[in-house]
Length: 420
Ligand SMILES: *Cc1c(COP(=O)(O)O)cnc(C)c1O
Image (cartoon, rainbow, N blue to C red):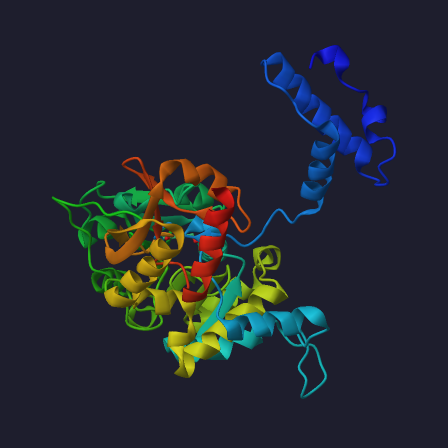
């Protein structure tokens, strides 16, 4: 086919009873022109128009199967929700809710009341506040407690959290001035002490969650920083990144932080929705709550429903939270899952090392098993229905079973069969 053989947009769209037909025909013809110029055959244009119209109506944000071996994968939406949390979201989404209404008095309530008592119980803190995400929580805390004043933080903790976003750049927008102390690999409590002056409003500690400086390193213990802060009558803010509400090897427990305020994400190892959670001293939390930025950073009702549903599981059934369950899988279970997948797809079983991801436990190695297939399947599987995301390594495609549920194995096998 040559360029002059192509129909016009109107000719291609004629007879197709669809309000999007003209737009879709334009897209299909633009692509066909490029292909002809590149020496390729564009094929059946009517069929491609139909496919384009189907694609235009398909949801863009949809479920994918995570065979990457990374549990809290930021690009794949971090934590999957527990069934109980999903049920609470559906219930809150379908109708109206008591989001900001006190049902006992019939007067105005606060959206913050729904998760606060659970958070207090689970962390032992005096007060709690939930905002859009943890970066927002830090921004709000610095704006409310240190605007126009100084925040002392270790150079070794001013990290980039992915996609080019750097914590210091976000924090600078709060209007607080960051005073960096120590060096990349070594900072001592005395460094903070020396930097404290009349303009200091806050000491900040950022948990080194998505990286580790190894070798010749030193960071003060958070207890030492808390003591330094107390001596100077200053609050200490502890950004735990992920944080843990139950014992997880290597991850600090929120409940054990000696800081005046602690902030952490809802969708990392907590296993809930995107959210930024701040717990700590009631007078400080109250200053955050009354700051104008709180209104701009507030959490929406669906996230709040998911968070409450997740937090309630921590009271008596944390094993029902998918991230926690996947973190504790036995090697035998993972091997059996990989064997079942390999049998269904004609692959081989390989031992792998999974990761927590999402900026938590960067050095933790989670022993896992994968089904190895030919590398050429990687691209078509990504484009599959549902899409499957694996890892390409040493000329093979590894489908890691760490973050796949047992009932997803058939879906993966189905997608593989459709690609062959
Ligand atoms: C992930 C992370 C953040 C940002 O949290 P979001 O919920 O993604 O905004 C901030 N600080 C640390 C240490 C983190 O690991």
